[in-house]
Length: 96
Image (cartoon, rainbow, N blue to C red; front, side):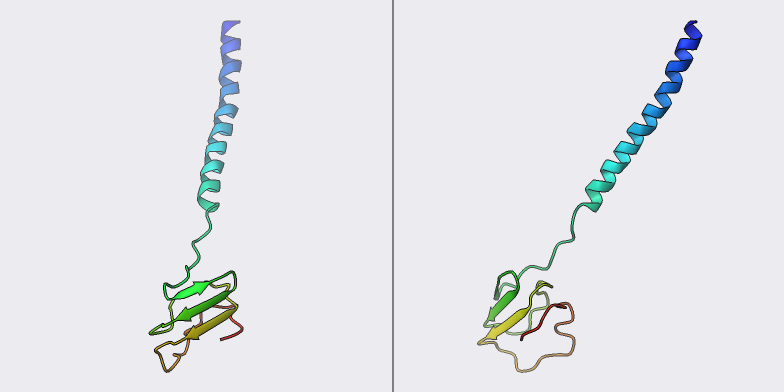
């Protein structure tokens, strides 16, 4: 009788261990996948709002501008030409 009972208890532990292992694995996956990649921050020479950026006294075109910027303005900037691909990583840009 004792051996039947311990055999049943032993078999019941296996599914519980699998469930616990699955929950740990799921938790780890959610913690790592739940973080969004960091968006580029507004450059120091610029002031950014949700979809606009105003850059003053910029010596060159900033390399990192938030990708959701629609309008990008330069005031009193010190560059005279815009290189090809300067706005490659600002896909929403409509107004320069």
